[in-house]
Image 1 (tube, rainbow, N blue to C red):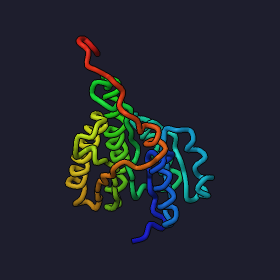
Image 2: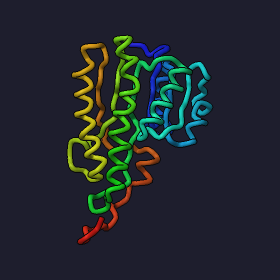
Image 3: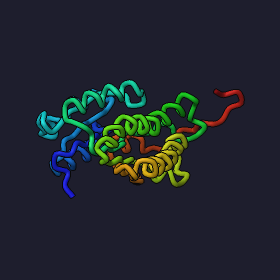
Length: 207
């Protein structure tokens, strides 16, 4: 298998796993379409020693479908149609149900699940036209068991179902979908959140 000149879109590209993915695919000859909401993404090409023919980026909040459309229009204009999508972006800041308010719940579902759907929806038409493409979702072992971070875990469990649906619906047209379920990875983000959950308690009338 070769990735030479394949256009690989990677979300969450500025994070620890995202940067490693960018470096890996670049080393294999791919072109990288990097997406992240962090402004630090703009310096990633220099960090990776990547030229404009092999690297393009878009700063976007992929929990917003309009920003996703804008980002992919820009990236395909710079590098060409997306061959591989890696839905890597995600995270959690809500360790327990008691510490998860409605806004926090929506944030985790939008950032981990809705964003993957929006990005898949953006690339599938082009993949169908070429009858070729790959979608790789980065899930979590949290999607299989109760390991804390309940909103994040619910989103990752739903991502497993989303991946199955993508594979079933678009596999006959040459578009493959798979999911990877890693455990905790020692990224800077993981280290910053490696602490006991806060002592939140349910309160009568709490919202």
